[in-house]
Image 1 (cartoon, helix red, strand yellow):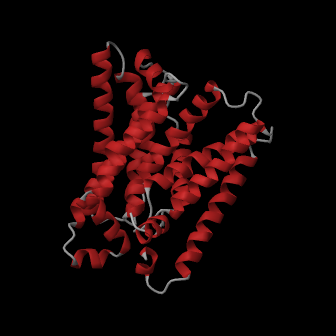
Image 2: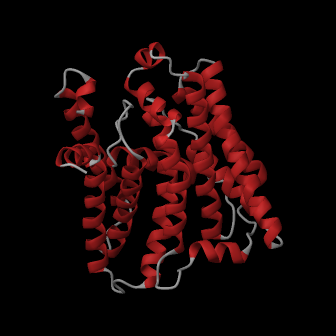
Length: 328
């Protein structure tokens, strides 16, 4: 790799690097002030909470890259949680099949979003707001009250610690990145998503298949949200149709995307940045707990960080006369 190539890659991924540095600083402060310090239980608990939001943030990143948004990711997350508490039970084979059904239904929810957007010609924000309400209604029908169970062996394997103290959830997150994000980003559809987000008319004139790209993007977003919901069931051992949980994860996923450097205008960003943005956002709550501050302060700190991240991104856009300059 030449010096020029290295310089280009650093500029391309500088937002993700900034998010990683932000998370490292916040997490170091958290560990330094935690009474138990750097121990396996502390790391595992923090990782489990962070990975849940990170995967939902990945789900949000895909539509945002296409200059859209998915306000239903939190409700697909909740629906998958409720489904898993019914289906991922019994023998190991039955639990595996149940998990497959949960993920398939999540992908189907995302596909439905895409179909309405493409063929119904509705705005993503309106479409996903409406479908999110439907998904929540289905969740409530499945779980009128919190309860259910999940295959204990699967839950323990995914939420515990591996030999050496490595949280298993980190391996799950890495697998999701390698299996879903990396192939998508390097595919024709992934490049088309960035083209659509940069300029829809230009992408259309260049021969990009707009409809197929949108369908695949929202389908993968639903799949990722369902993976998060399945993991939530592994953490809690139950399902809960909570509108509050769905709303919080939806809003925090948008915040994580922005903190991770993905432009809400579309066309620029990375799921890797969103992952670090999610971990940084989640660690803020833990940090407030360590310093024994009132929980009511947490939304204030998250709002300030989000506002700062959005403002910095807006300043960058104001400095260029042509959006193509963002990729130089």
